[in-house]
Image (cartoon, rainbow, N blue to C red):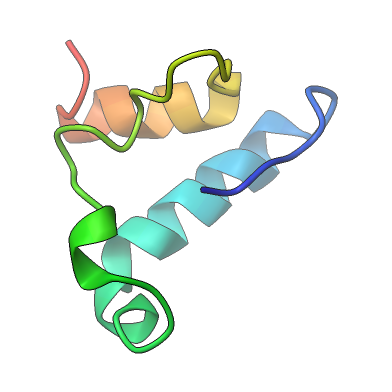
Length: 64
C-alpha cells in the first residue's frame, strides 16, 4: 500500500500506479508477490483512492 496526500498531482499518482502495475516483478522480492492483485488493488477499506490511481485502474479495466 502506498499512502500519499490528497493534493498530490493526479498525473503523478497515475504514473506511480502504472509503474507498480507494469513492474510487479520488481516488487516480488521486496513484498509478498500475492499482495498486489489487479482485482483488489483499489479496494482498501477506509482509505480513499486518489483520483489519479482511480483513473489508471478504470482505464485498465480493474474497476468498473
